[in-house]
Length: 248
Ligand code: NDP
Image (cartoon, rainbow, N blue to C red; front, side):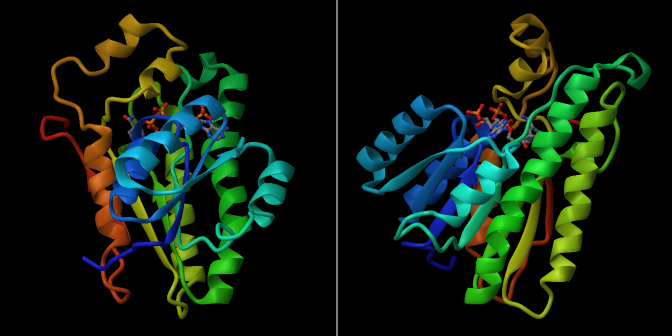
């Protein structure tokens, strides 16, 4: 394991689930965290917990990745010592509904595409030039099994994650010849607030998603993200698919 102590790690979607678990895993190694999401109260609570538990300083960045101008401006004006990002975990994302395409809500599609695809692109576009200039960096995109196969009624969400997979692959090609690495970590079912968000707080429906299997925990995913980030510089885990053992 290569030390990433004092490296600056930006995690989008750090206010919950996989992003929060990644922030904790990185903080435990002594990395410096930029915690980005829309819910400031949660980020502040997390920053305090990281300080208390690991003695790590964090920077809270209230950011809506769908807002192109805000994303560009905020990421290009980070104060010292946060301005040079070593590791970017592109995790912010969501799903809305489970519908047949011809019955789905166009508003839901817009939200998924704006967040999962365009938001990820805005953040990446803002930060990769600095990594190339400094000849150091690692982008870790949180994809999904949904980017590998389309499940019933999951059409648009699956399309967004297929897009993330294509973006990871394309970015890797773009950065060939530089030391900047690109990894895609693609989980199956993980128990987070994801299903609550998908079903807009319908907890009965959300809980049914995890019936008959033991889902991954956010920490399971964070372990893999950290593993990718701590390989020697010549090793790139370009794509990791991790599933609950009993998920088909
Ligand atoms: P959660 O709902 O627990 O977390 C989603 C995070 O994304 C929150 O921190 C939320 O923060 C953030 N987010 C959403 N929209 C925006 C936005 N516009 N700007 C900034 N941040 C945003 O779900 P998960 O932890 O499960 O999801 C994390 C990632 O993992 C997603 O990309 C998801 O697609 C992927 N994934 C999840 C799986 C699962 O089964 N749970 C399986 C495979 C992949 P806030 O609301 O504060 O802005």
